[in-house]
Length: 133
Image (cartoon, rainbow, N blue to C red; front, side, top):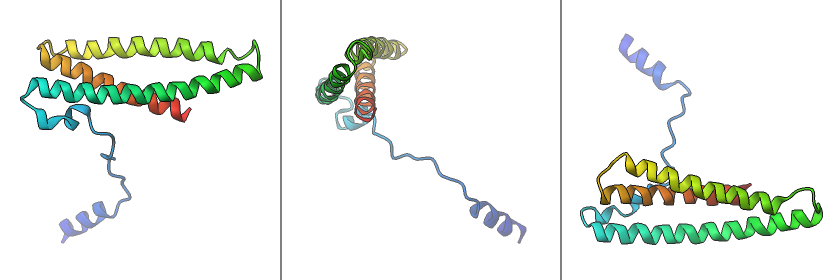
């Protein structure tokens, strides 16, 4: 009887469950090609190309917004220059971080797939960041 009451007490708590509805990792998106290195690489490269096109689009919109701010506040905001500097720094970070993650594996093609997976994930996150802020 006490076990049942304890179970009911636990179940009645207002505890949120973790949200697992986040984005799927790119290597999972390409999982149908597991064991086929070339096919996996083509799949990941295609997803990376799409992610970079989306980033370019978001960056263009952010650049347009920055240019408008610079026109409204000439010589004060430097929004365009700041965006360019931030994006250059972000690109260097993404490339170095993904190489770091790949180097942890030290196993050739799998390390390269991990690096591409990382670049896709960070590129998608940057795209979202540019669109939302």
